[in-house]
Length: 298
Length: 286
Image (tube, rainbow over all chains, first blue to last red; front, side, top):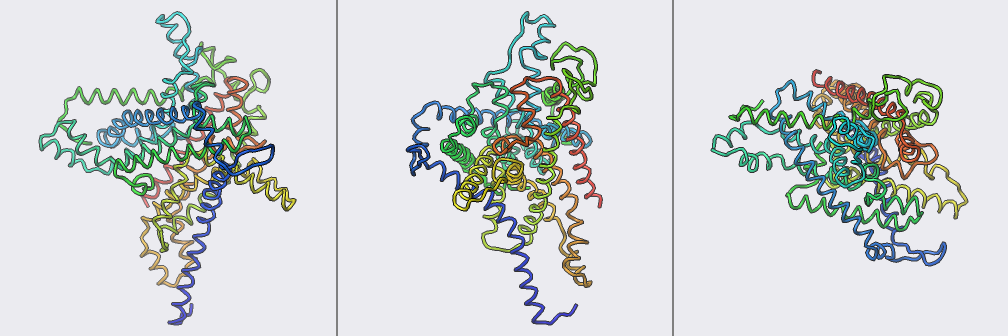
């Protein structure tokens, strides 16, 4: 290959610029066409109000409907508060498991435990919910077992209540909590914990002053993903909670598919997005983390 | 293992907790899988004996999954969608990895955050927003240019776009992590030895990335296969398997054929997950 001193440099610079444009193109197309434009379209649609059949005007009617109809905002608040509860439970239940896998298990069992943890991740939501239905319904395994053991003398229905919905959701999102926790705890030096004990700390102080602050990026990352997945989930609340589970995504589905009222559905979508983004933003601010050092860290 | 001056009862209590947790993890999966082999018309106790009818029987009322036309068609559509999504998302994930690891351009950190955002948007919202944009575009073209574009109506094409929109973030993160570990002096050495840039890419950089690309592809395949939320709003007449199963569960009521499908999917995704781990492990020995 011939290289002229000046020309080669020029060529190389041009080549770099061309390569950058070629690399940027798929990224830009993906984000612009599938994320930015669709959301602009949805905001636009949500700001249209129907004044007569097939006649629309700009206006906030869909949002006013949301405010004036207590069922709608009650559902959003209920979805939000139950999602926060699910997130907290997932953290409380998952943290000891992650700690055990990362710090207490022997090297050989650690890999195996982590793998077992991952297996349900690869099974669809639908199958997991189906499994819970088979266990919990009136003719299900647990009810049959209790009758067989003579503890109760008639079938019990465990499905279609809030506790079941929460159990099902915690189960569904648990692994998204454990995986980031294990990877941050794994990077923690054991001598930090030992130093804490040597300086006279008891188990609780070591946990509060050393382990939790260190694991904060993992905790926040897990909480963000879990909260978002829970608030946006559709299958688990519907299947385990029944027709009256009052989950906000169900309202969106009803507006879009059942009532064919796309304007209201789009407004509800925007509201859900604003709501989850606000909660995530608050969580990041309160914990002093950023999106870049939590979820975006690969 | 962490040496701690802790009493053994504490450690045993901890172990018991971990064991209970794993029972909690496994029980619904076992319930979903085990009833596939129960010789009964309902997925419930009592156990009526072992059978493979729910897989292979070809007559009603115990129509096995491999003879159930609608389930097989759903499986086929899911497969086509998942293969397309994983090919596209691995390609864009790789270009994104080069863009963010090698590229120098203004507001890079901002764009990196933008890349991660699809992962924190609820799937339902991605689904409806893409549905709205596609329908708006299709309506506009139909009314003003008299152009009927069938692929912008709910169907496989939109399902692929909807899943691609957030799965690409996952593949980008996986492949970026791998490219960050690449030692650029290897490329420089090859260039100094007279290799062209294309050849360096083909013989050195891409082989280094291959394990991550395969693993990302498998993850993308599995996430696409099991996706429900985004797909629900974009699905047309060609329903993938999760939608077909959901319809049957909600409308017809469940028979053990759904357990058979569940068992089949669990084994399939288990094997694929194992494969992705083996591929990833390979890289460390090299």
